Image 1 (tube, rainbow, N blue to C red):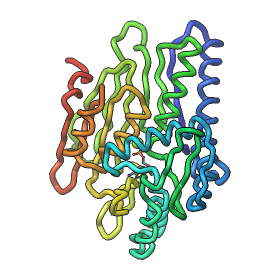
Image 2: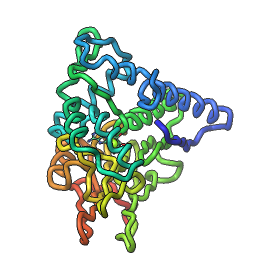
Image 3: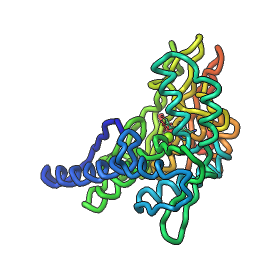
Image 4: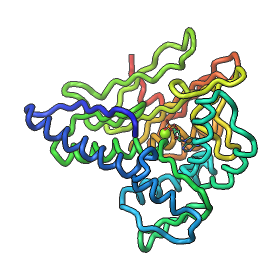
Length: 305
Ligand code: AMP
Ligand code: MG
């Protein structure tokens, strides 16, 4: 997944802590081997190569679970979240290297291979069929959340309950550290001069994910384009936003944070309010004005003074 993972845990003794952490990291590596879109031999890359061949391909339980979750988020966000964006992401990666907007003809061509409805999950025999030619799946917006959830499961199985697992901007926590009510997490600030004051949340048995263009973007002709693309237009987001989502699991938080980034505050808040236990904090600077928005449940997680 191209980013470091970190585990913070409390255990009775060091050997136990070390063994539990090693088992969790092992699980993360295993998932990386399945989900990587950089590795041509990952299960995901091999599946992508079968697109348009008119045949269902058997997949592992992990890949099936992530794809099912992704498809559900695509439906719920009306296509704002879509793991078939691979061909678009490739074009934007190239745009970033060349500092030039993607060629409109190539963009139109890539859009033909994008669309979650081109993914058919076959519930009976655990197979997946990619219906359009030249499809390329990209799990960058959901796989790290899944890996964090799975690492947490391994740690719990090892008897570790007071633990935090993080990777990139996402994290999940189980029970709080001894003597405290929760894990204190700072909501990432927007990278602008004089950002609004830092906010903190206190969470236990929850996940938190952040999406935005702070670390990954390209500036072309004075416009800043995010690495998150709108699958419906093929264009990188330009509203300069940072979306934090709290949810019951990290797969959901990760996918929601990306979905809300694409949807924007109005439709994004609606999606959050209809997800059990979810909350969001959105900061944007679409023009010269900074805008913030919060869902109704967010205040519940805020640190009380
Ligand atoms: P995140 O940081 O979780 O928001 O994920 C961003 C990554 O997800 C990007 O680097 C792309 O690999 C991929 N991606 C970009 N746009 C979308 C989208 N609209 N839906 C799903 N994945 C996306
Ligand atoms: Mg995400």
